[in-house]
Structures are given as structure tokens and as C-alpha cells.
Image 1 (tube, one colour):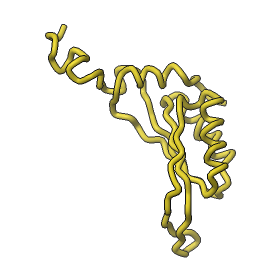
Image 2 (cartoon, one colour; image 1 turned 90 degrees about the horizontal axis):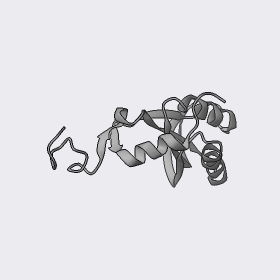
Image 3 (spheres, one colour; image 1 turned 30 degrees about the vertical axis):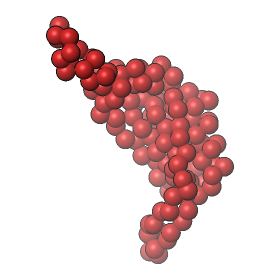
Image 4 (cartoon, helix red, strand yellow; image 1 turned 180 degrees about the horizontal axis):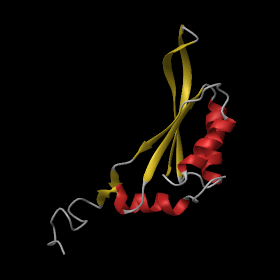
Amino acid sequence: MAPEGSANDGRANHGVVDAGAVGEVVVVVTVVDDREVAGNLAETAVTGRLAACSQIEGPLHSVYRWDGELCGEQEWRVVAKTTAATAPALVESWVAAHPYDVPEVLVVPVLGGHAPYLRWVGSEVRSGSL
């Protein structure tokens, strides 16, 4: 057992731990060009228990190349917290509902964080596929 106040006792670092210690939490991110669509993606992820929570950020200005042309568009980013086990179902859900031909849907690992929050994320999502 680590001495009280040491880096390993869970208090000195305010409960910040390696994500693997409480389950593998990931962040799933997409962008869309319509605020209402962003809201629908965020809400259905949470109501379907594919994500513990979602945020909508924006508007953003995205610059990209599409069909050989430089494009710039106003978009909204949807960020969802979920588990690695549930991420494939969330990706599938978002791709199916996404208005883009080739939607950006990224799964980003969480290396660590506040242990109670990471546990909460795991408790709020279901496991498995759709």
C-alpha cells in the first residue's frame, strides 16, 4: 500500500489515473454542417446509451480538399465519451445517420483522467453492437 499523500494513493493526484485502471474510455468525434443534425447525433448517442455524454462545439470553420477543390465550410463538432467496447456501435450509428458521403468519425483513446468520471462513463453506456 502506498503511503498517504504519495503519488499512488489516489489523493495526491486527485484521483487522476490511467484509463486502463477503470476501463477503456474513448472519445468519438464527428463534424456536420447543420446544428440540428449535430444535436440529433449527440442526443441519440446518449439516449441510446452509446455515449455517457455528448457536447456540441461550434460553429467551427473547416478547410479541406474535396474532389480536387479547396473548400471551407461552417461546421459543428460532436464529441461523445464512451467505452472502447461501445465505440464501434456508436461509429456505426453516426455513419448511418450522417449526411456526408464520407463522414469524419474518429475514435480517440483517453490515456487517463479523473477516476470517478471514467467509472461514470463506463456505467452509463451499454456494451456490444447495435
